[in-house]
Length: 265
Length: 286
Image (cartoon, rainbow over all chains, first blue to last red):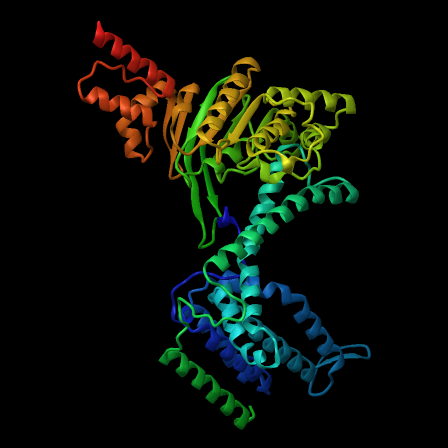
């Protein structure tokens, strides 16, 4: 059942943020990420953190998805904080143990880096949670197009990416089905030596490859039958029109970047 | 209750926006040695239900029973459960991975840890049970067989566990009517001669329906009807309300009855319909 497997983080919804044009969304994210690196103080970054939390509320993403998304960077963040506490000196001494001291500049810089990291991850998470993998691919692919001039087949690369994304859940589902069928025939995928586990994998990989090749064949035929040709100009059923509000969002972000750079906060 | 469920509910991806109830409060039971047909349109939850019966899926709530015991999650108990309940998946021939038919069928007994001569014994027995001839078959590559033969080899690959219960998910999918009839006759024979309890899922009623003792009707994850096959087949209007078409021959016979012919309407197979029409003709002539 495809219901039991999802790809990436995408959470379906119908909010302003979900409806935004993926091309603009990708561009806006890049601008915001560079803006995060332009900030020089904690208050500025905190404003951005507050802003992204607000945007999550607008996109109606439950809070636990944020926590889940932040879990992978927990250790990196802790590690960074410890490094700064140990090695950055200056300001008031907060804590002393023999010759070892923790000083306020270290704490400040550590917090600064952590807030920047968290905000950065949250903004990226907002993009992947509110954009389907497919439109994300097309959004990114748009910026590959100029590479066509130097011989990179951008359209085809995007098509390959889109098809791969499309078939990941299918293959996952299929391998799950195969595993269950073999478990029903007495296979044990959980216990046993590494050798027997490797042997078990063989019984999964063979039928998986057979079906993947068959699917690839059928898909190629179906695409050609519907007129797909390499290098041909394609149009899309759902034109990703850039609406007025998309332009406004882009413009606002650029203005913000300019302000941050100019004010040097 | 030999095998069955009690208030079984299954939710896919609970606690996410993708959550959906595949099964809602299902209670049913099958007796030892029975032959049951599980009928429901595609997406009605048949596969989900079936996968609970040998412990592949865990109920979100409710219980699954086998031989008087509730199926838990204890690993060794599950392992021994799967030696007693054989499960044949949809399109099982897509799952072949061996280079010979022998190895394919020997996979399950080998997993059971049997001795080589025992394994061979079981392979031969299973092949004969599905009505194939072992000579010229066991050394062939399973991919090179015909669709019908592949399907039978896949059945043999599960029968080699020597299960007490055989569950088959849409075993006739992709077969022609003759192949389908052959297959259900085979199942009926396994049920009668080998005394294997059989549960078969299928997405429409047709002439094989009368081979079964019991029918269980599932739509939209709910159990709508369960009982003796003949009783349920007689509840025509209810079946049609559930979107299940009756066997074509039954519709023809019903139409004859509606036009006032003294026809016996308890007919679900082509041969029974032929006999009935011949009988009518005779009555007519005399």
